[in-house]
Amino acid sequence: MFIEKINNPEDLKDLSLAECTILADEIRQALLKTVSVTGGHLSSNLGLVEATIALHYVFDSPKDKIVYDTSHQCYTHKILTGRKDAYLDPKYYKKYSGYTNPDESIHDHFKFGHTSTSISLACGFAKIRDLRGTDERVIAVIGDASLSGGEALEGLNYAGSEIRGSIIILVNDNQMSIAENHGGIYQGLKLLRDTKGKAENNIFRFLGYEYRFLENGNHVTELVSILREVKKLNHPVVVHICTQKGKGYDVAEKNREDTHFVKPFNLQLGDIKKDIVGERYDVIVREYLVEKIKTDPNVVAITAAMPVVLSFSEKIRKSLGNQYIDVGIAEEHGVSMAGAIAKNGGKPVFFTRATFFQRAYDQISQELGINKLPVTMLLINASVYAGTDMTHIGIYNIAMMSNIPNLVMLAPTNKQEYLAMLEWSIEQRDYPVAIIPPRNGVYNSNYEVGKNYSLLNKFQFSIKGQKIAIIALGDFFQMGEEVIKLLKYRMEIHASLINPRYASGIDEELLTQLTEDHQMVVTLEDGILDGGFGQKIAGFYGSFQMIVMNYGLEKAFFDNYNVEQVMEKNRLKPELIFEDIKKVFCRSEKQYEDICNCANI
Image (cartoon, rainbow, N blue to C red; front, side):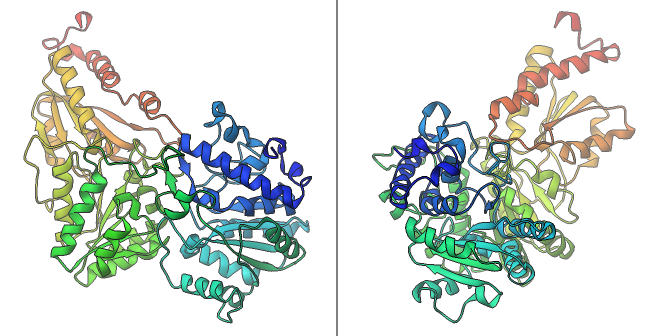
């Protein structure tokens, strides 16, 4: 097998083009076998095998800089740059991350998993090269879906006229985002495909690029030929290649949306889609929104290329007509447009992965916050329990967004509360609202949940007790319930349990009330501590004689982490929290000898 002989890109250059074609088949089989066991980005990697081989065959990495957009299509690149063991030997399947990582190889230049960045990064490489007078080539690899992102358009606009030397932008056109593409630029790409690159209406030429088109972007020989040609150029060029997403695996070719990212599956059976077991919030909220849209023409569901996070299938999307909007990878545009819809009486619900709201921070603050526009935002996976690679973790959103003036951030603890908050948010007309869906499983409420959240920052007692109060936010509420039980049965303390509901403010009246019969307040939050919810509570008690203990996550970029290990490290376990409370509380027991004899506990 040729794949076994490739330890670095130089080994690849010893193969003939015919042998490279065989290598592509071997790599594709290795990818299928590995991803079926580990899960990962499947169809996007299957489609870029030949292009990656051609890039390393023609260019000289790491001297020549190959920058992958999003980098979730870098598996073949990793195989060719000394990391094939992770795709050939089951013992090493989890050895490397699913994205480029300079800590792994000198052939990787950045750690990232967000999109539309490669052209701007390539511009930086090209600019410093030209300033130094060196001769390396710079290649940005970007998928057609990423071209709708604001930064990609900014990079395209700059590079075509401002980079004086060579810069190569390889546009991988597979006619897909995660779902279908949306936006006018895709009409232009279709025209170029239909005319085999000859249409006069060509955005790339208009922006200053030389343009090359390749209809079969999965043909190694043709790819090598065109890349050799553009390598000689000393000005910006776009190489537009058409590839098959999911190529080589019939299930992936026919189900490109479902196979963009997959969990482990049976390769022979092709059972990519798993049956839904038990209740799931994505389905619960999807069904709620579908019904809401059917009964109210003002309700609009908006996403930025992420229908999957609420399980909006193609059939359901089509059934909603104009009341379902996918803006493509364009969160800034989506948030601003939602704001204008709300301004004119509409009821927009904007949903995407929590980590992607980072790209729209300015619009959330300026358009929504300053103008108090009633947009509902669902921060999907804003939790330590969700995505575990450093580019997709959602533990920063509370600190990032809860301090924006006029923004109401809600953290439901169960299904009934989530739906009640969603209903209130959609119907109210006074505030932008961000809701953090729970990620610790679907719980049903054992108490009557509130229906109206207009009286802001009013916390709710779940259990009214004494001495110690546990304020447990969102999906850490159930952890708070466990701590309450430990306090009761091991220290005979009947503590208070409080559901704060709001992550963006504090209930000063309730917190002041606690000073009358409580000596300690413990906060739990599913987010980083620095700048988070608990610090708001601690800040309030600065002038009081109240012991405050804050529990959450340290400010760090966790990568491919084990949830249980991270929780234990941050002492986010009921037993560990209880131990800490016991230690601190008993230290001050001179004042409370009637309730606790530490030596006997």
